[in-house]
Length: 226
Image: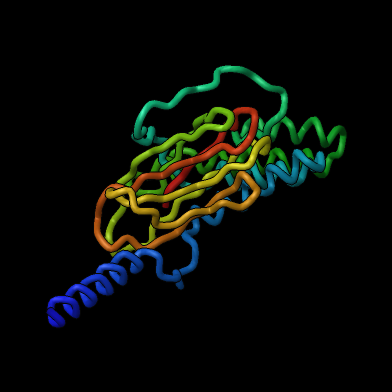
């Protein structure tokens, strides 16, 4: 009887250790694409909050030259989309960012020159770094008030997995990552709408990415993977 009990205890400890392996601390630096998207999103939010043309220009340049392949992540379950409109919210489209930067800049020749330079950088990047097959993937979506969207994506085992979400600045967003058995792997539940989750998948398989909107209005967000 003692041997059976000891065996059960050993197996329980081993299973727990196996489950926790995905949650071990990551020592590798953040991938360039996810780091760039985080910086660009933060600059965009700062630019709109402070009417800073230069911040919007740099956000447009970063977001417009970062390599991402536009995809439609597979949704898990039904997603109720809020089709209403609102005047507030951060724009992440590079062209819109530069257009708003021009409004903030007025007749400032220095900033207008920076805008022209950013436009050239973005045009040069088109067709060269964006849409790289097998590279970072991203999509834009909308999560209704006090609701959630869940997507599923396949990640390689033995490689660091990263997911970033950045919203329009109007509500708090949280991000949860579950494995294919719906075990919670990691989460980002701070009080902003810029969320980043990183983990070490033990095996190659599907992982669920759940975006939760804690606010009373919809949030239009971008979700991207490394």
